[in-house]
Length: 89
Image 1 (cartoon, rainbow, N blue to C red):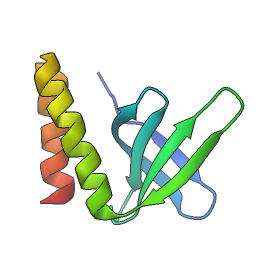
Image 2 (image 1 turned 90 degrees about the horizontal axis):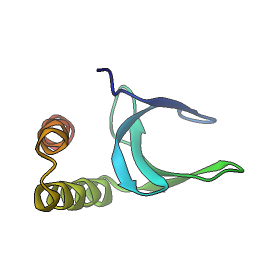
Image 3 (image 1 turned 180 degrees about the horizontal axis):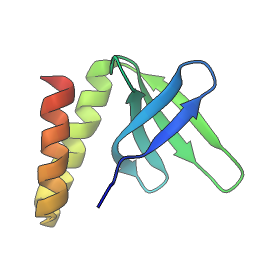
Image 4 (image 1 turned 135 degrees about the horizontal axis):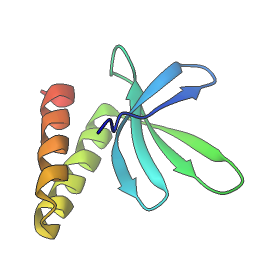
């Protein structure tokens, strides 16, 4: 199963989906450098980009990892753990 998602930012080009953050929010990063991070909020009408710092993005991913671990989503937890290590370490 291919779970990679991309969107096109009007200024920064192609963004890569890191993980879901909330029901209507996802964390994205620039495809090649993975230095700029955005929380993308999706609604029925449109979607918005909110730039965030690398440390805030890392904190969001770590919070998501805690939720997955508590919820027992082993496969999703392992996938996100690998993304966390690749992106932030």
